[in-house]
Image 1 (cartoon, rainbow, N blue to C red):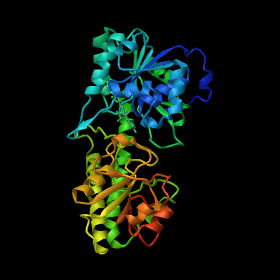
Image 2: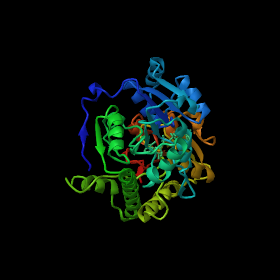
Image 3: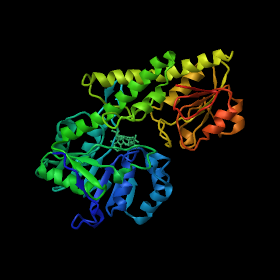
Image 4: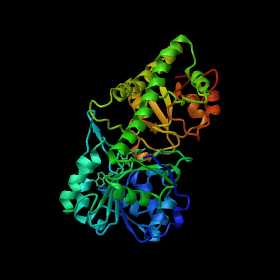
Length: 425
Ligand SMILES: NC(=O)c1ccc[n+]([C@@H]2O[C@H](COP(=O)([O-])OP(=O)(O)OC[C@H]3O[C@@H](n4cnc5c(N)ncnc54)[C@H](O)[C@@H]3O)[C@@H](O)[C@H]2O)c1
């Protein structure tokens, strides 16, 4: 099916109900921006989250760096009266559209779809005829139809596809990306039948500029799996290349830039200390590629620390007792998202090997930073006093020229620094 629909005129689409009640389950990096966007588009929005602290903070107008949402945007939604954060599923009563954005945590390599099931059970008693339920969580193909559907049907006594609409639309959040945001990133949409697809598409047509309808929730779920695996595998490929080509004297960064001049069939990915962000819930045994890629990427923090120890050794210094300054702890550039961040793994390994770890992280909530890391501002003195400065996250706000000038030794995992003191991954 894969037809791209352009909704440039979505603000003016008639008959899509300005007073429709939208419930967004999960007010995290995915759910919060979606809830606010829906409120801005004129829907009345209830944002449900089981985390009482998160709801308290949202009610007080504090987004805490979640979903790159600025405080002014949250405050505007709260004061408009069209956005209510709550822990109480009773506030979902009478909803027209419910979007589930709860996480699928990976435990011992196995994705736990329990939160999707729990959200479905909690929302089902509030399901009315003609309402629409959409799953956005990243999950295995089949989850919408085989797991969520029976839970909703059992809890509501209604049938999906006839009494209510059901579909899946994968998330494409990219923390820190100011160019591609929710509203201008094409959204893949699906439904368990054509009527469901139309309902799901009609909702997102008011939220984003372009929708991409596909033939079934399974296909939409697989689309997300392909996108995430593609990223994971390609990062692993360049990480492995960086590891094996270094000793050969070849410059992998320059080679990637050169390869990217090929006008077709190549996309540049860059080496780094790992991947980070939410874990890919690959169904067990489905994708050997993803498992191998994960293994390669998970080994990167250890490789980075080994390289730093070797670099210090050349300078006749030991890692134990060395003062290390990490630039960035978030997993992604210009974001404060610390989840599964490889920079945190690097910090923990350094501390375990006796280094004194200082770090600069301008975006993350200070309360969430590791206790054994001393958080500092990036100054010339701080860079000069370190035995090694490690570029772990390439935030644009860092002054890389100053760092390369002031520091005696820079280990750059993100290819941002140049100079005699700089060693690149
Ligand atoms: N953040 C990203 O960059 C990103 C990108 C693409 C896809 N995703 C996917 O989107 C989904 C959500 O990710 P996120 O980044 O928003 O996670 P998050 O941890 O930031 O937020 C999830 C929220 O859901 C809440 N929650 C958990 N169970 C709940 C329940 N039963 N009822 C109500 N609330 C509940 C949690 O308290 C949390 O606040 C995941 O499946 C993730 O894989 C995330």
